[in-house]
Length: 290
Image (tube, rainbow, N blue to C red; front, side, top):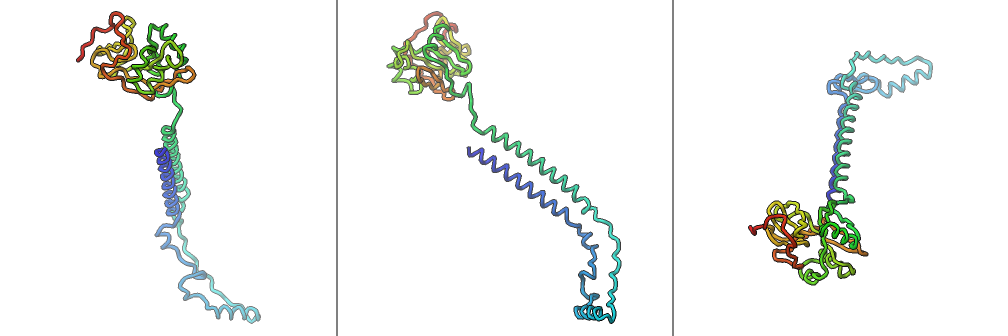
C-alpha cells in the first residue's frame, strides 16, 4: 500500500511542476521584448519628464478664463508618434500558448496513464488458480476420484497431486508434520472418512522437474534423475534432498481447501510414516543415491 501512495504522490508532483513551468513560459512569452520596450515612447500629455506639461496653477488659470468667457486656453497638440511595427513575439503569443499548453496536456495525460497503470498493477486483486486458495471439493468425492484414477488425482489449476493418506498412519504424521499439512491428513480420522488427503506440489525438489505417478509401483517417480517418493510424497530413493513439497490445507464441513500460495518443504530424508513399499515394478530404473 505504501508503494501505491508513493506512485500517486509522484504523479501529482510531476503534473504540478509541468503546469507551473507552462504558466511561467506563457507569462514570459506574453511580455514585450526588450527591443519593443526600448522603442516605447511615453505620451508627453500622460507622463514623462514633466518639462513640457503645464503646472497646476496654469491649468486653474486657464479654467478660470474659460469660465469667465475672457478667452480660451489653448493647449498644444501632442506630437505625432512615429509608426512602430508590431512586435512579432507579442503577435505569436497565442500560438505559443497553444503549443505549450498542448505539450503540457499530453505530458500530463501520459503521466496520468502511467500512474493509473502502476496503481492497477500494484493494487491487490482477487486471484484464482495457482497461488491462491483453491476449494478442491468434498473429501468423500475426492477419495472416490483418487480411487478411480488408480490412487493419484491431478489438479492442473493448482499444479498439485491429491492422494489419500491412510487413517492408520495419522499418529506418526502428528509427530512429523505441521498443522497446515495435518488438516487434510487427519481429516479421515476426525471427519469419519475412509482416509485423509494430502496435497503435493508437482515439482521435484531436486531440480524442479514435474513428477508423474507410476501406476505399477504406486509411487511418484521423477523421469529426470530418478528420484522416487511414496504415495504421500515421502522420499524413497534418488538424489532429491527431501520429500515432495506440499501445500497448506484446511477442511471445513468436509470440503478441502488448498492454499497453493503457501508451499511447505517436504519431509526430511528417512521419513516414512505410511511404510508403503513399491507395489509393483518401478516405472523408472532403480535410482541411485548420488
